[in-house]
Length: 214
Image (cartoon, rainbow, N blue to C red; front, top):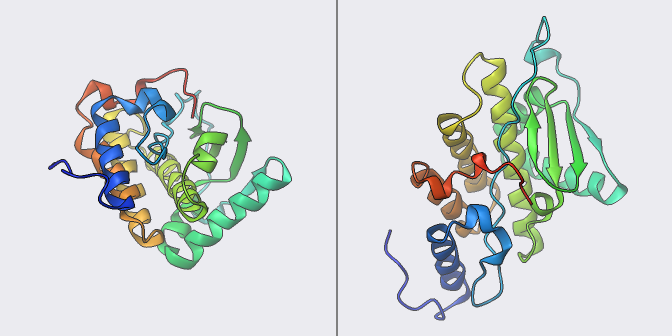
C-alpha cells in the first residue's frame, strides 16, 4: 500500500496516513495511543468471538430468533437503536443477518466480544463510541461491529469454525461490506481492509489479545 506523501494536505489524507501508520505500529494492541496529526485515533479493533462453552442440545433455527434485546443504560439503548436503524435503512440484507444471529446486545465497560452460543454481543464503551471520530462515523463503526460479531454467530450456527484467523477474516469482510453501504467516509473501510490484508502478521492479530481495552 502506497504511503501518502503529504498527510497535511487535507483531513482525509491525515486520517488515512494515521491509519496506515497505526497498522504498522501494531495499533491493534496499542489502541488510542496511536493518533494522527489531527488527534483522531484509529478505530478500536473488532471484537473476536469468545471461546464457547458446551453448546445447547438444540440451536433454534434463524427464523425463530426473537427481536434483539438491548441491555444497558438509556444512552446505550438509544445509541444501539440508532445503529440498528442505520443498518435497516442502508444495509437491509446485513440487518436481516444481524437479526437472525443476535438475540442480545449488552453494554459492558471493556473487553468487547460475542458469546456465540447465547447469541449475545458484549459491546464495550470504546467500540460503541469510537472516541475521537465525528458522530456519524462513530455510529457507522458501531453498526459495522454489530455485523462483524453477528457473523461470528452465523458461522457457529452453521457449524463452521467461528474463531481464529480465518473466521476473523470472514467477519472483517462482512464488516467491510456493511461499511461500504452505511458510511460515505471511506477511511473506515480502508482501515478494515488493512486488517484483512495484514491478518497473517502477528502484530495485527487483535483476536489473540486477552485483556482488551476496547
